[in-house]
Amino acid sequence: MESSTKSRPSHRSILIIEDEEFIRLTVADHLKDNGHSVDEAASGAEGLRLLDIDRHETVLLDLRLGDMDGHSILAGIREKSAEIPVIIVSGAGDMHDVIKALRAGASDFLTKPILDFALLDLALDKAWERLDLLQERREYAHELERRVLERTAELAETNGKLQESEALFRQLVENINEIFWLQQLDPPRMLYVSAACEDILGMPMDVIMDDIRNLADHIHPDDRERAKHFYQLKILEHSVDEYFKFVRPDGEIRWLRSKIFPIPDTDGGTTRVAGITEDITARIAAAEREKDNQRKLIQADKLISLGTLAAGVAHEINNPNHLLRLNAQALEQIWSQLRQQLDDVVPEISSISIGGMTMGQLDTEIPRLLGGMIGASDRIRDIVQHMKDFARTDTLDTDIPVRVAEVLGAAVSLLHNKLKNATDHLEIDIEEHLPPVKGNPLRLEQVFINLLMNAAEALPDKNAGIHVCLRRQSPRQVELTIRDDGTGISAQVLEHIFDPFFTTKRDCGGLGLGLSISKTIIDAHGGELSFEPAQNGGTLTRVTLPTMEMKS
Image (tube, rainbow, N blue to C red; front, side):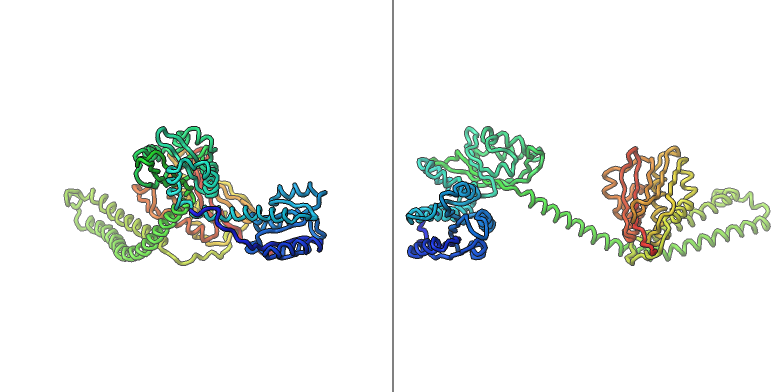
């Protein structure tokens, strides 16, 4: 690493902000005679305009200017640069202001008139020495990670020079965002840890220095067993990287990455290790978001393919199913007519046995079988229609003024028998004079029927109730809530409730498209559909729809 005593430039660029022309010109002439570049400003505004932080290396500032307060000028300089030295040039009676300026970041001060320019030269040398040191420190910080192992090994070999080098070492490690630490192996003891530990780990340096086990106790339980071996560093022969979770005292979990280097002693053994620990929580979170987005893209692609497949399958199934239904209906009519003619033509037909069944049994079974075939065909037709609805990509016609109360009433009327058989406690509360919504009444009715059927099927017996409420939720929204006293909904089910083909009623013939289609319809209406556990058990379904703007 280069020495901090490298040669410094002999020619500097200086900005003088002084409204007393004689003093300004005198100081400027002296500095120019010494080979420096000088810019002059007779006012604070001009000084701030001329200031070039990439060129000027020092500012000489008078606190008493006609147009601006010197402290404001100092603040303006510090906004542009925290490092450029500012030397206050002020009268002997302004010491209170000088002290205030020094606290605000001024580098030094001189009283005027300046009778001995050696004092000015000395103040400038001190300021430039500090400026050069800051520049060197930045350069050291950029190279620290690459050279820290080399530097630490040198320190171990030249222990006699440790005190001399300690100040420079601290300047280096205290100016990086990562935690630098140095550990003795036997007995385990932390020799040094940088101040960044307080920001990353949430633990003061003295707590870590007191007992290294204070760190181990905060390693996340998922990583604790692995980290136990990680911190057994006596057998470390090569540098290693390790990733683990750390639980801060405030409960926040941080992902950390530690790079550890063995420090060989003169005998070739390892008695110390050095490490750099960085906080990679944001990086891990970004990677997780990327994975989640990738999963969503894959799922979306699957659903697109599934929708295309569903549309094709629906078309292929519909034609033969329609034929089967027509044939079953024809056979039903033929059997009815045939039985009447057989009774008239063959009086003893009732005593005949066909296929192990009497004619009386056939009179019962054949209509039942044919009816079952027609019913099964209807079920296939309904499933196909659901699949076609799911695969449909055209936009819904949602431009019709719809009275939601009327649509809800129609849905309840259609499900009258279903609801009557499910519960003895059906409560319906509809607020009067609700504004219309802009939408499609048939599609909204389809959603309401689906939600009411779900509520009815969730009830354990008829003593459990269904509570329906339609009201104005805000001046521009109406809200429908359906609360059932059923068995409730688990968090696992709630997570996938809108996924196509996800159903908890597979054994009962559920296809898992109802809620997915319902959400698509409500989204197309500009509304929201959500589910949540009810306070007293059961499930609360909530539908919000924007009202239609009505002309006065």
